[in-house]
Image (tube, rainbow, N blue to C red; front, side, top):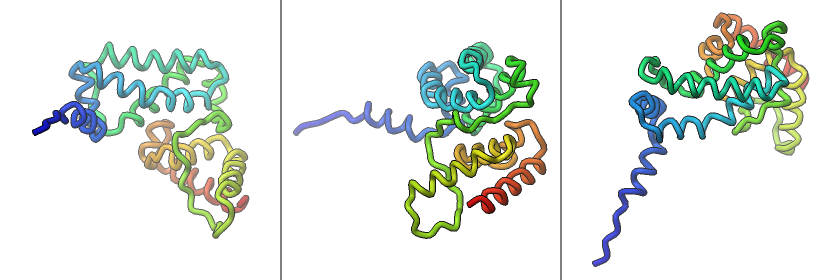
Length: 193
């Protein structure tokens, strides 16, 4: 009888199915694999998000690296989170505004042309059977002409799937401001589409 040990494969599958809470707790307890997982999964997303606020690539990369160094240094004192991406993006936005004077002075101009989301936005439109790529180009062009704050809310909501309360925390604005901005952005998108 042939016997094969599936334990290594099961460990890999288990790590893929872990929740953010479990991964975060493992990281806080000193698991280097959890740190590598977090870094590999979110580094590019953080850089893409950061590029929307400043043209200085070195500022962004330094801020992202500083966040990870700070996480390592303060690992035992970190608060719990059930959404690692939210935690990191909020930290990055705050760090950029403290680090980059040009970003701070213009109250963070969101430049959607630099974003490289891993997923496509899910925006309900009235297009019936039009070409999907044409639809995506129209949506992207319509988003690009939105005011900066509206653009950032749309990207955080539809590209990164954050809720309004999470967006309010990331952008450090009131929940009602996010809700109003979101509604204005959707109205502008409907009018332009």
